[in-house]
Length: 357
Ligand SMILES: NC(=O)c1ccc[n+]([C@@H]2O[C@H](COP(=O)([O-])OP(=O)(O)OC[C@H]3O[C@@H](n4cnc5c(N)ncnc54)[C@H](O)[C@@H]3O)[C@@H](O)[C@H]2O)c1
Image 1 (tube, rainbow, N blue to C red):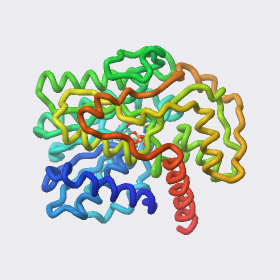
Image 2 (cartoon, helix red, strand yellow):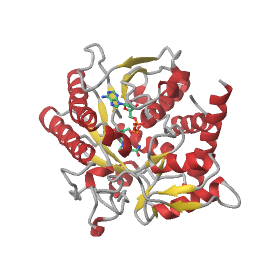
Image 3 (cartoon, helix red, strand yellow):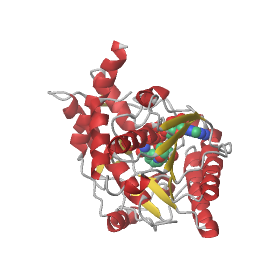
Image 4 (cartoon, rainbow, N blue to C red):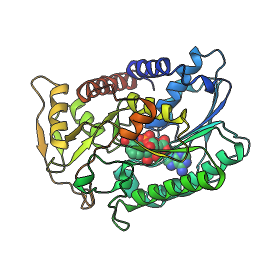
C-alpha cells in the first residue's frame, strides 16, 4: 500500500538523485527484504527513477514474507520492470539472478520480533549475507549495500557518543539481544572478507533508528508504538523511565544517504547512516503527544510484562556522521517534528485506505 506521503517522498528522492543514479539505467538491481520497511521504500524510489529514466533498470525484489507485508508493495505488482520472488535468502539464491547492484536489506530488525525468532535472525544475518555476497561476487556486481546496524556498538562508552565508525563496541555475546547484535557483527566481517578476498565492492550501512511512513505500525519499535497509541487517542505509554537517548532519521533522508554510498567507490567501508540529533525517549514521547493533538495527549510510564524488554538496552545512541558527510556531502533534511507529522499523516491515510477496502 502506498500513501501520498510515501509517493511524494519517493518522487523527491528519485528526482534529487536522478544524476547520481544514471548508471542504474539498463542495469539489474536486486533488493532483498523488499517488502519490509526500508526495502519497500527503495523499491518505490527505484520505480520513481524508472518512470523518469530514458532506459529503466530491471529489479528483482526478494522477500520471504517473514516480517514484511506483501500488501506494502502490492501497488508495484503490475510494474513489468519488477520481478517479485518469494525466497528465504538464508538458502542460496537462484543462479539466474545476476545483479549489477545489490541492496541487501533482508533481516529481522525489531527487537520484539528478533527475540521471538533468534535462530532465523542469525540465519538471515550470517547465512543470508553470505549467500548474497556470493551472488554479488559470481555476478561481478558493480556495487552492493549490506545492512548492518548501530546495534553493533552495543551500549557505547559515553566517551564515544556521538559514535564514530572506529569505535569497536560494548556488546554482550550472551544476552537476549545477542542474536541480532553479534550476527550483525559477523555480517560485517563477511562483507570485509569478501572485499579483501575477492574485491567484492560491498559497502556496509549502519542504520541508526530509521522511522517514517511505510513501517509496520505493529512493528514493536518505539515510533510505530507511539503512532498507534496516538491514532487510538492516547495515552502514549513508555515502558521505561524515558531517559535513554536515540537519534531518529526520517526514511527519505536515510534512503538518500544509502544510495549516495551505493554509487560511491567506498568499497569495503562501513558508514553510520542516521540523524545526529540526539533526543531522550521521554522528549520524543512529549513531541509526539504535541504533534498528535492539541492539547497534547497524555504520556504514561508503565512497567513492561516482558522481563527481557530493557536487558542490554543501550543508554545512548547517536552517530558521528563525519565519514558519511565527507564521502557523500549528504546531511539529513527532515527534522524530527516534521518527520513525525508526515509519518502520522501517512498512518492515518493507511487506516482510511484499509477501512475502504
Ligand atoms: N529500520 C531501522 O531503523 C534499522 C536499524 C538498524 C538496522 N536495520 C537493518 O536494515 C535492514 C532493513 O530493516 P527494516 O527496518 O526494513 O526491517 P523490516 O523488518 O521492516 O524488513 C526486513 C525484511 O526482510 C525480510 N526477511 C527477513 N528474513 C528474511 C529471509 N531469510 N529471506 C528473505 N527476506 C527476509 C522480512 O520479511 C522483511 O520484509 C535489516 O537488515 C535491519 O536489520 C534497520
